[in-house]
Length: 444
Image (cartoon, rainbow, N blue to C red):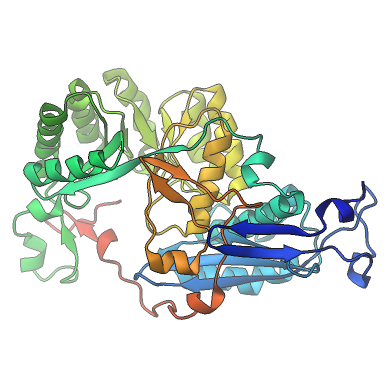
């Protein structure tokens, strides 16, 4: 059967409305050129950024338009710390690079775009590339009339099991937070004592008295943090027993030897995993960590470069790969990372915070559904405002993430509503600016 007949009139319907309807015309000047199989080759006509900031979090989406009316795709390129730079990379470079190329050749477009700047593996260009890549997968799913997970091999599970974040400025507040999350059906709960590093527990910072840094810089007392984390694990385990799985994020904010000692001390509380014990610059400590504890480790939120994960995964130096998918370039490389992990028993735990668009969360979930070595996914609940901007966004139920089963990634964008929330001209750096008592910067 001719593909024109196969895909003619495919309706992309969601619970929140139609995602679009497209038909391949019998013949047009743009479709005179054909792919190798003799069928019309759908061409890219425009690659553009869509930006929105409804809750003070900069979200960036790439839209890929084609020469077929109504056929387009969306992908997530969110990198809020350098949002304007990503927008420039999309609109001034990828648009020109991609025009006239066939949407069908995702791997070829990814590889050629990846090296087009010569220097590579930087987060700005990787995020721009991710938006393009995810949008192309979205289009391919629409052309096939299938959700993207079907193109990746089909479901390995009925839904995506998730963990949620419990927080409190004291062990007692934390217990209350865990209780509420447990009542919502979550079986995996990450426990944190206030913000990363429990900065609220720090004493007066000498660097502030000396006028060093800026008044907004945060201060972390690393020893206070290290003493309190075993306390919260013990408190939560005493209250809830073994009914729930406990996770914790060190967020690379202590020295490697201190992190090793802390993780060893937490072993008796059987954490599901401890996340990001070392900064990427300190990958060499993983072998020492493995010698001292059996606690499962999740790593990779800050990874951009294949050299950061290839050797540690092949040596089984951590148990969960926690890559931020848009930081490495999208679905295409993430699937390769997942397949690599399958051979070395490294499970996926993709980074899924609030500064990922609903399209990015959908991309996470489609991979989660399809790969055998899925581990866990970070939960997210979208506000009514975000759901208005992104109809068809994933949703949570009883601790599981569910996706819209429409063809493609299943998420559309109301560009008029998105435009009501422009990017701020100045970025708030507060959460990344954390110092020791003397003012030495702490790397997140």
